[in-house]
Image (cartoon, rainbow over all chains, first blue to last red):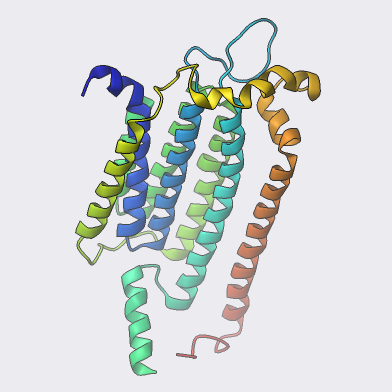
Length: 124
Length: 179
């Protein structure tokens, strides 16, 4: 493993690490709100991947100025602007669902919900 | 360095079981990533992330937490299978990055498909110096309209879910006894 590869791919690897942290929270934690936090972490790591791809070393933000300049790629930025807004939409619907589940079952823990469901099936 | 801080925050999110602390850490995480976006020249994205990620979503999480309680119980099953799945996916993804171009190179393929056209021509065609704005509002205007539709649908969905909850609470016995 040489140093050059480490420096040039450090961003990608941290992004993957964060993505996996989000994924792990999502699949291993029982609390629904914690799951949504994990989903958010996952989303933000994908945003970081895209912004990383758009960066040019020594570039400036893509706002046109007088004279010559190197601009970073504006297209990933546009995509991610859209994605952030869609992300907050999914988060809010997810939280509203969690609140409804709390109303119906009295808990947002997956295990307890499963237990209540099993009890209903056995008793009904 | 920001990335390392972000990784540390992510680990904190994983370990802490008090949801209030988790939500606050998620806000910190958002703010750090906004800083990262600024460093990587994505000022518009950083602005949106700071407003939406660190602001609105923290408020939403706090509101949901107030209704759902703020302590997470200990997970009942062993985390070995999820850990295995996550490690496997992570290794596959890292293997995938071996073919990726180095970070920040101006010759990377992303920068030479249509991006050049937008940077060179958008000022003559649209007249806005900020390329991100002109692409978002003009070249990809339909996409942005679709995005607002998504937000509208989400708002309607949240309202239906929450108003349904309230009317059922006001009429006790209307629901919940169907088991």
